[in-house]
Image 1 (tube, rainbow, N blue to C red):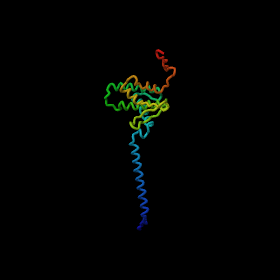
Image 2 (cartoon, helix red, strand yellow):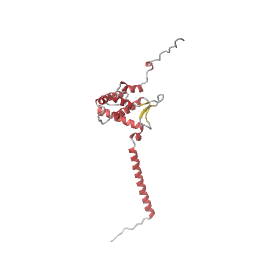
Image 3 (cartoon, rainbow, N blue to C red):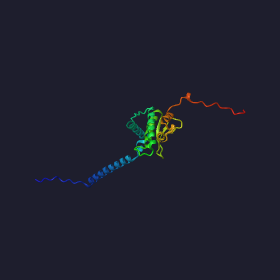
Image 4 (cartoon, rainbow, N blue to C red):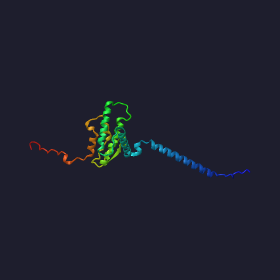
Amino acid sequence: MNETAPKTTSSPKSNLRIYVIILLIILGVAGCVQLSHYYVSLPKIDRLGASGHMKQEAERAVRLAQDVFQVDLDYSPESVEKVEQILAKSRERYLQDPNADRSITPSARSYLWGAYIGEVIKTVKPSEWKIDPETKAVTLQLTEEAGQPVINPMRWCFQRITRGEPEDNVWYNFLLVTVEPDPSQLRTPPPQQGVPGQ
């Protein structure tokens, strides 16, 4: 009993359709792989945008504060004073050996702490992160202030670690940006004097 299956013959049109479908599937997969490779190779700031990127960096600062310094940061304005204390310790370590090979350089740490301070500023003052298209520098723009001033909390932190002058205190700088002055505390200009001989 030799049973043989009936032979089916396919037409050239059906073979062509199969080849076209297979080719389209291959091209689709290759296109997706290429697109995902492009997306992954973009710098994180381009993928997330300035706001998403800086929020992520601030979260890294919170973890670093907890893991290394045993300090809890909660995005409250008062927590910036804790960051100042962390930066003071970083300043001491920097002074001991400013050229030491460290796993995180003062510049990288400044970026994390500055991102955190900027996120806290955003809870107090309407503001948004901006990227300079030419330099790729990230700054924080106060959106409801006259002239929409731009501040750079990352620079504050870098100067606090590397320079350490009294005016580099980040808590002080934070207060200058976020606290509205009490009009009763403002000095009034001195009365104008008349020109002598008039």
